[in-house]
Length: 289
Image (cartoon, rainbow, N blue to C red; front, top):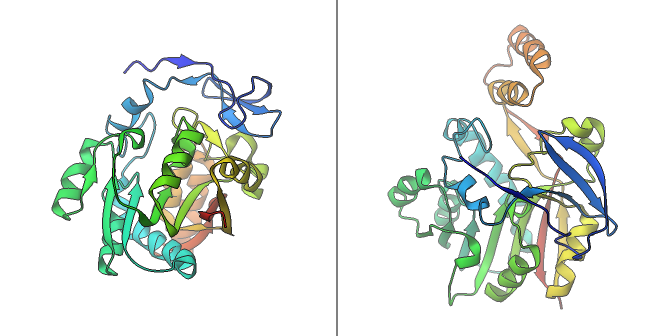
């Protein structure tokens, strides 16, 4: 699959004033004078949708491998994140999950009495969504049309993929109910994990992760749209030995993975799950009062 590259100015401030940070898999990560970190040059806007329409959830070049194999862990993540944001939700109503994949999170909301719909690009996920009776829009968020005002909009590991930050936030503002909340989970460039791992940080996926936020730059992005951060949560992710070791293998830590397998086998940790830091931030966002 051909994916063309193009140079872009900073999606946050619009300037062409940045310095190089890392080169990862042939892509340059740069930091703008406004402190925003992004990939430049990157996959061009016209070609980005190809990534998500090409078996994104079972792909060795980008995206995920064995996404459905980790369904139980993923559902535990979603329940944990929902409990984290629940105190900020004023009432149940319509919910939209952008980048909903096979609909696991929306199914959890359905169980709790929400009206749900999703946005998803990968055709491999459509059958699952249909079997779960979850309405979905099969194209990019920029083309999504609705007359609804949502009480809850979720973007779990999505914001770092979106090319037009201000356009997306303006659209989110207009479909968010007056007392609604946006729950936005994204890799945190300011995290301790990123500082420890440097360019080996597993969140650096420059094909599809094109923008990297911190608390500060996320607040900067929201401000022109009369949106604000109500709460920041430092989320984790449930993992077991198989999940962790497969991720270590994928991201090049093969020696560490081999050692981990020996240790988990020795101490009988196979099959046990724990909640671990992923170097992400979970922001609860509302209309600015």
